[in-house]
Amino acid sequence: MADRYDIAIVGSGPAGISAAINAKIRNKNIIIFGSKNLSAKLYKAPKINNYLGFPEISGEILKKEFEKHLDKMNINITYERINAVYSMGDYFTLMVNEKVYESTALILATGVEYTKSIKGEEEFLGKGVGYCATCDAPLYKGKIVTIIGYNNEGEEDANYVSELASKTYYLPMYKGEYKLKEKIELLNGKPIEIKGNNFVSKLILNNREIETDGIFILKDSVPPGQLVPGLLIENSHIKVNRNMETNIKGCYAAGDCVGRPYQYMKAAGEGQVAALNAVAYIDSLKKL
Ligand SMILES: Cc1cc2nc3c(=O)[nH]c(=O)nc-3n(C[C@H](O)[C@H](O)[C@H](O)COP(=O)(O)OP(=O)(O)OC[C@H]3O[C@@H](n4cnc5c(N)ncnc54)[C@H](O)[C@@H]3O)c2cc1C
Image 1 (spheres, rainbow, N blue to C red):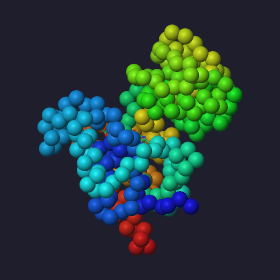
Image 2 (cartoon, rainbow, N blue to C red):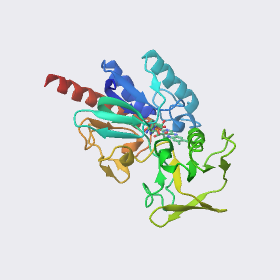
Image 3 (cartoon, rainbow, N blue to C red):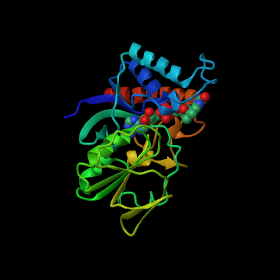
Image 4 (cartoon, helix red, strand yellow):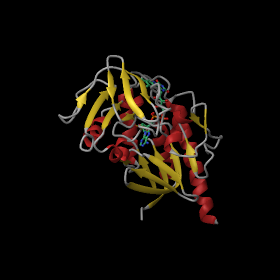
């Protein structure tokens, strides 16, 4: 059986980190999932003028300050990408491929994806289009798979998929050095449309067409409605009340994923509100 944490936090941007710090201060057993760079939107910011106490700080330095704070509080980020979360009534299961984590309360702090979806992406979701290559790779054994990677984590997934697929294409949506196995064909160009009948059969790029059986689109974050089935979404954001409660009991959300304005201070403040309410929720269960 998986260990059950009091609170699981998905996302390591300012919202998730602030939630983690506040829950830890309240003595809760927490786990926070995220990435080594904490948040691409944090370290890429050239100059930040609206984070209280840090005028004109660069995102890179603010990220280092956040890391120091995490270290001081003995909080380690678990560098894993949650693929799906299921509400089991009085607890949650969080899936990382075949691995499972459990928590009593959940805080979603996954940020938002600025990139637009590709024409056909939603239509073919579950019919050849997926967001988790490592989860669904076995379905494509001996078939042609295309991976569209928005960050270098996609390279690892492409290498894994290429062990099973008959042919693997990799389309990077970023610049850099690509650490790919030799048998993977690197594409360049822009994805324009996903086509097929009942199932995906083609990816149309601006410079060529690819015959493909499956397409994995790997972004920093997946749409929250995909991550947590049953979660209420309004205008592309997770619907929350002033306590940062979602429609699912024990599930809170904070930061860009709940709506505009997209700002660090607002994200951190909401992370704190979410954490304190999650703490109150856990304490109320113990009193029952
Ligand atoms: C270039 C740039 C400059 C900016 N400048 C400013 C500024 O000057 N001032 C300001 O206030 N705001 C600024 N912003 C906006 C600010 O970056 C965001 O509002 C803020 O980062 C939101 O924080 P967040 O915690 O909600 O999400 P994010 O910072 O986006 O963090 C979310 C994290 O969750 C992780 N994650 C997502 N899904 C999963 C999953 N399934 N499993 C595990 N981890 C997951 C992501 O990888 C990411 O690390 C800027 C943004 C950009 C892009």
